Image (spheres, one colour):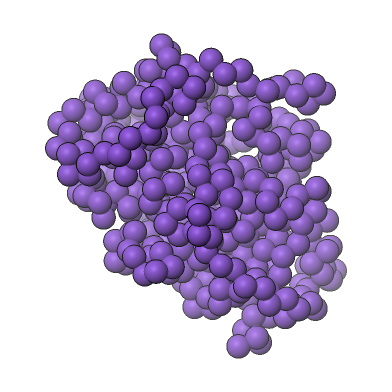
Length: 414
């Protein structure tokens, strides 16, 4: 594994690190984490961000206009601080077998929709269907193309779930049922004391949080500042339910999962993603991950930007149970089955994955982002979208109807 500098403009070159030696550093994980988080105050990158003329006011990304969405989602690294994730030199091959879904369609409220109508209705800029490892449908709109990176919001949560699995297999995390405070001592004496990593990944910590995207007074709208500022805000919230008993969707809590992971591995999330998944599995294009502040920590709960096909490869990596194309295990045996199974507190949610009927599961991001994985059908569906609202039953019902139609159509292709 390699340590990537937290501040690429100022730091020395990447150097190799002995994994066994890193494991011996566990007693000082908190010190390492605080150094990583606090360096941003002293050593922030001096490289200026490129704010485009005419882009408009750089307010909360939840308030962007449709024009800003299209321009901004594919160019986040030109607007906000990000950290790169380098592509593989040997991309995982995706063969093309077009035409099998040429007559795909579905109906809602007595109205029929084909693929083109779905893309217009749901403001879709990228749609990919991979069946048995071959592309059977691929469409782009809104100026996007095969090599366009797209800002996929909470899809990153499911990627973090995979990275936690890699850390378990590498021996950095001994168990999901260990208290998170074992890896992040600043949680001691807070509402998170005694909460396990599993409970945090299932969104059942019992800590108070309001994630109403339409409410300007909600917690998700009020958090900001550095990684440390956000952590302090979250861990100051009170406990309102016993851990493990109540589901409450909480993006900032996944940022906390990211902080635990960073502390455990002694590295940043982008470097770990590159070393464990992006390069080994054969991602075709560079990606980038949004940082909580210039030169600081990645959003554990959000904001990985990658191409449509590479998100499809994430789905294929999941279908292969966390193994590379050559069969090398990256995740523990049974990890995908364990983390995508419904949890007791919410039968629609696992460990940072949304559970679907029949053993299928999905990584979902607001404004219409999705990676849908159906192991029984060897099927992966990816959507990149720019919905006019963060969430909405009107759009999600069309997406679910399309996914169901794709599943039915691919059954006929066997």
